[in-house]
Structure formats: structure tokens, C-alpha cells
Amino acid sequence: MVQTKFFLASVAATLMVMPSFSDAHSWVDCMDWRFNGGKQSFDDNAGYCAGYARRYPVKYNGDQVSPRYAFGSLDSADPNRHYKQSEKNPDDWPACSTGKTYKGGEGEEVGSDETLASPVDSAYGQGKWGPMTVAKPGQQLCVRWPAKNHKDEPDNVVYINMPPTPMSKDPTQRQLNQWTIAKLDYGNCFSGGSDKARCGGCFTVPDRAPGDYLIQWRWKLNGEDNVPEWYTSCSDVRIGNGKGGVAPTATVDPAPSSTESGGKVTTTSKNGKGNVGKPTPNPPNYKKPAPTNNGDDEDDDDEGDDDEENKGGDNNDDEDQDEGDDEDEDEDETKMTTISVAVDTMVDARCLGAIQSTTFAVISNTPPNVA
Image (cartoon, rainbow, N blue to C red):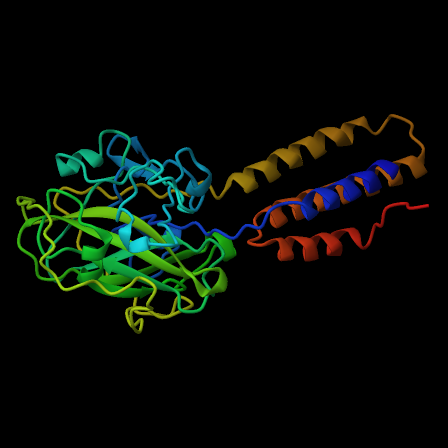
């Protein structure tokens, strides 16, 4: 009992001094999500991924492709996936993550390398990265991302930017701001909880000549003091035979500031009831990936292991123990389990205020033994 109370008090003291989790983390999980039919959602069992962002880590089993990491967990991978542009001057930041700190790192999160490869398709496949998206003008593309605790944020917009011509070098963010082809509702989410809810939206590929084109996913999140935070993911889409490629030019009108909302979101609606669209045909010779659980069944495996351990424990009932001591130990174990779950939940909280309020709720039923 004394140890349990001491542990609770220690956890409370530790959480009180933890920093605020103000930065959000999201990225493109799939650039070309294909619905299986029936209910059209972005849940794992409702479709599969046919195209990924640049250098997106996957596993290959013959011709079958599956995620290398559990859904929504690449913010803790090395390197992590999310890329945040500077809050002070986001339009002057690289449009695609370079995989390294840029200009001293004024508040941006580095992310992994999503720069244009040469040749373009060398950022795909290679036995370790997801396949490249193949599409045609007028085709619907559906993109998926994790909610990361922000599906209910106001003015939550995803911009889909695509240059009018293939390019031999990634354009600047100011140029891409001129080439927005769709605006999606970031909060169009389905199952998975607030952190790992499966979210997504669909758009139509515009009329483009054959070539390899950049598609930028750019999420606008209203940060502290209503200062926007910008997160991007970069993918390539092959139209036709993939030929083409010109240097980006600046012969466009001055780009609007990224601090503006950019207009009304009309592509999808919230809560999984929006226009997620119809399935699109597979690329030639494409083999559908085998169903995967994206690592979400790990908890189920752990529960099974716990059951086996409990069965083994039932065979040791011959040992004589004081009944009162057993009850105290069981009570301590229950409290330790409860506080462990609470700690995991609180670490995922976005801000210190949420952590503090949860901490007080947890320890209120078992106050420390203060003289």
C-alpha cells in the first residue's frame, strides 16, 4: 500500500513538470487509397493503398506490400515522417522535407527526406518504399492520413497542390500556393480514436499532359494565438508514360500568404459521411496488397499472453498465504495497472492542462499518506 501511494505521488510530480505538447504531427499515410466497395471509408478493412508518398517505408512479401510501421506511428519512427514548415515564414520554407534542419530550424520539425528523386521513380519500390501513384486526367484520387488528435479543430483545411507541368526540380512553396487543385476537410475521419482515426478525402486529377507530377498535401492547423502551423507531405503521380520535366519558373502572380484560410472546403464532409467517391481502377499489372492490421492487433496479442500467464498462475494455489495480504497485493496491482494506463493516455495529451487535470483525477481516489 505504501509503495502504491509513493508511486502515485511520484507520477503526479513528474507529470506536473512535463512540457506542453503543442506541436501536432500528421502526414500522408496513402496517396492512392482504393475502396473495396460497399461502405466507402478509410478504415483498414475498407480498402488498400496503391500509391504512397516519396520514400514511404513499407514491407514486401513477394508482390504483396504492407506498412512497415503501425498506422499513425511514424511520428515516433527514426526518421519521423511529419514535416512542419516554419511558423514565421512558411512560404519561404521548402515545399517538401529535405530530411534535415533548414536555416537553423526556426520551429519546424525536420521529417524524413521527401525531395524529388532522379529519376523520379527511384523514390519508390527498391524493396523498401511504397509504389508510385499512377493515374490519368479525370480519375479520382483518394488520400489518407492519421487524425493525431486534431480532427475537431476549426478551419481544418488540407490543400492539394499540383504544378501544371512536370518539373525537374521541386517548386517553391510560393509557386505551389498558386497551383491548388483541391481543398479537403482534415476532420473527415472514421474509426481509430482521436489519435489514430483514419481520415481522408478525394479529388479529381486535373487535365494534364503525360509526365511525372508532384502532388503536395499541405495541412493548415491553427496553432497557438491563431498562428497557422503548416505540415506537408510530397508524392509523385505518373500520368501516361511519365515523360517530361521542366525547371520550375516564377512567371506567376504573387502567391497569397499562407496565413490566409484559402476559402471554403467543399470536397469532403465530416464524420465519414462525406463524398469519399467511387473506387478507381487499378494500374496495369497491379497486384492488390494482402489485408494487414497495421500493427493495431498488438494489444490483442498482449492480452492473449496475459491470459496464458493467468492460467499458469492458477496452478500455484497450493501455497499458503495470508488472505489479507493477498487482498492488499491485488489492490496494489490494480492501482499500478490503472496508473500505468493513465500515464500512457496522458503522455499522448496535447497540452499540459489536459495532463494536469487527468493526473488529479487519477490520484484523487488514492491520496498520498501525508502526516
